[in-house]
Image (cartoon, rainbow, N blue to C red; front, side, top):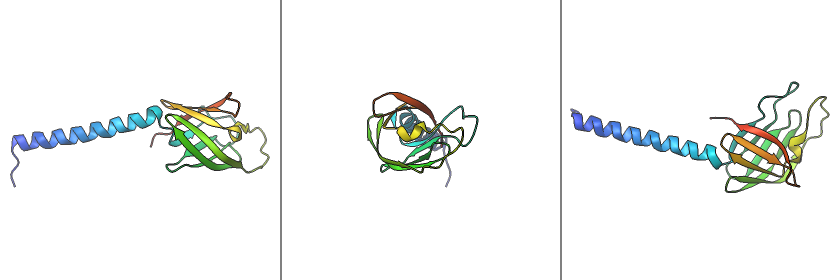
Length: 130
């Protein structure tokens, strides 16, 4: 089968359109979808990095840098509401366990702003690009 210049241009156009659609989809997710993996940045001096993973379907997992977190979440726009969050209770020196108090979070660009049940900002996490 021989390609003509028109066929090559059509193939290139289709490939460009597909790439643009994927890029726009990724940007839309980054701008307002809290689904994904989020890390504290810059990392604290000691221990592991606080992390939240908000999975499709409503599963929540993560760590405060020492203890393991688990639970569920629901989405309304760019806001996540956390439900039934549980945490192990290991004592780790020099670890700020703020993440276990998370009640809601709002995704704006690459930042997830985490709030407690009273609506106070308790921390921020950064999106991990996949």
